[in-house]
Amino acid sequence: MAEWSNWARTVSSRPREVVMAHDVPHLQLLCEESALSGRRVKAVGAGHSFTGIAEPTDVLVRMDRLSGIRSVDEASGRVWVHAGTPLHVLGPELQRRGLAMTNLGDIDRQTIAGAVSTGTHGTGAAFTGIAGQLTGVELVVADGSVLRVTDTEHADLLPAVALSLGALGIVTALQIQCVPSFLLHAVEAPASFDETLDGIDERVDGTDHFEFYWFPHTDRVLTKRNTRVSGESRRAPLPAWRSRVDDDLLSNKLFGVLNKAATRAPRIIPAMNQVSARALSRREFTDWSYRVFASQREVVFRESEIAVPRSALPGVLRELRSWLQRRVEVVAFPVEVRFAAPDELWLSTAYERETGYIAIHQYVARDHRRYFEAFWAMLDGLGARPHWGKMHELDAAELRSRYPRFDDFTALRDRLDPQRVFTNPYLDRVLGR
Image (cartoon, rainbow, N blue to C red):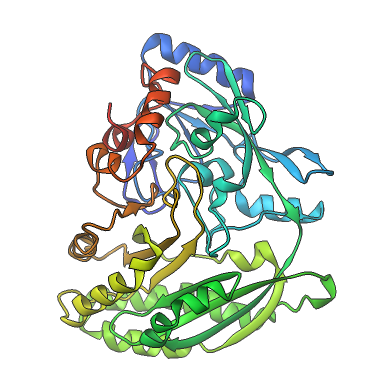
């Protein structure tokens, strides 16, 4: 048996069989035979989720060969993309065609199917998550048939299959509504915690893509403002040396060394955060959108990210700061804060509400439980929705009350996968059996 584990090493399994998908007919036969034999099938991408959402139990399906752009409609800007295409490959491929995705997350190691199926998002008050950019999904369902859903074909199902958690079938291709390629003018600058929260609405609404990182045990944040611009002549990327120093040394190699030291001596963390917060100085540059949205993350960590109503976000952050000021726990990783527009996807964390996201992290070698559990306790009564690919402890009974279309989704699951060919322990917990 081959052993599988996710990137964060929070979940591992030994599936009975590993299958490399050759094409869609191959997947059709595999799903049909698995349903008849009672085997469970799970397509696996980059494994970048922190939950067990992609955990394979019986058959692990690799989608590496179903990668690349299938077709481009130049008139509409709609692009069919094979499900196994990594985001860091897709960005340059679209750029060569003069196109771009409207918004992206801050990591681009995922496959496109994995990113949309877990609800991966970026930031920006006027922009939805990645799944909100889909106008079509093709998937193989449990009986081996191909279900093609677009905004003109089975359109009533698009809000369900665009963000499906991998619970409805194996996604084979996705149609993305792209836009003409564009530049992002990035301004990253230090600020104070209270200054940022006091003017949060002005900052979020006044910038295309606004986010910030708060360094626990300090009053320092790093704000990131990305403004969309056009005209290739305005491109002014970071010098290679600056990018290497800031992103490689401070965010990866040096940050990893500091976290190892802090694991041996946690008392140094508050002072270490003060130094780290001040080491990241202002920088300003302009580059192609896919290069600005994403950054490298080499240090392994644990993460929980929760979506709350945007208006509730400042209160949660201030409560989190108060808890950390008591030094119940010391935390070296910054807290990441982002924003998103409402959408109509049934299982989206931003379903029908303006959303603020708070992501907390802990270094892989340190126990995360006390920190994460304290954070989760602060969210009672807010209708908080956990990112499907980030750590949380909610089950179907609790999630049902937070998603108005939850029962509609599970009814569709009953219809498309009555034998639960595509389930696993995580999906049993969050959706029910």
